[in-house]
Image (cartoon, rainbow, N blue to C red; front, side):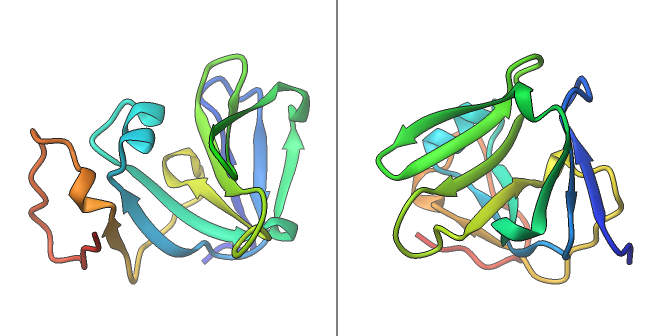
Length: 133
């Protein structure tokens, strides 16, 4: 397991480092995540904000308030979805990383599907991971 996990956007304008292994790995099926990622679901892992370092291209990091108290961050050059976080309240000191942007190897020990009640009608969940809502 690496000491740090490295990641980047599609065009590599933004590069980041995680100082710890991502926790609370989930595959979110809500309509906002589906639309933000253009996929059946979005896969995230979370770290404390202090464990995320933007090592290159912070000026290219754009933000969008997708709902009250939620900010999604993406590359303004290539559009890659990178981060999701709450701006206040419980868990506001955490940031969720779009796992597809990790460049370092990352293996999953535990994961879950969330917001399953909102999943795309054309996608069937056929794995053994836990599901909520």
